[in-house]
Image (cartoon, rainbow, N blue to C red; front, side, top):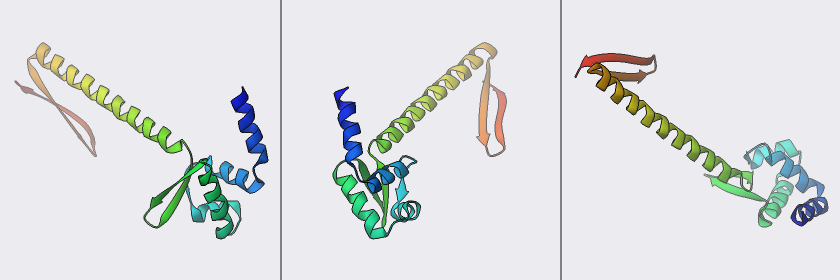
Length: 128
C-alpha cells in the first residue's frame, strides 16, 4: 500500500504539462511531431518535458531513423510478450494441424494436401 501512496504523491507533485504528456502516451507510441500537435505546445517545450520524463524513467524514446518514438515504460515489453505469446499459440496450432494430417493419413490411407493462398484454403487427397 505504501508504494501506491508514494506513486500517487509523486504524480500529484508533477507539473500539469508532464501529466498531460503521460496521458497522451497512454494511447500508445507517438512521434515528437504528434506529441507537439496533440499537446498544443512548442517543440522545444515538449522535448524539455519529454526528456525530463525519460530521465526519471517514466517514458522511453526509440529512434527510428531520424524520428523519435515516445512511449510509456513497460509498453514495449508488454507488446513483445504479447507477440511472443501469439507466436507460441500459432506454433501450437501448427503442431495440432500436423497431428490431424497424420491421423487422416493413418485412418484413410490417403495423403491430404493443404494449400493456402490469397484465394483461400484448398484441400486435396492423393494416394500414399
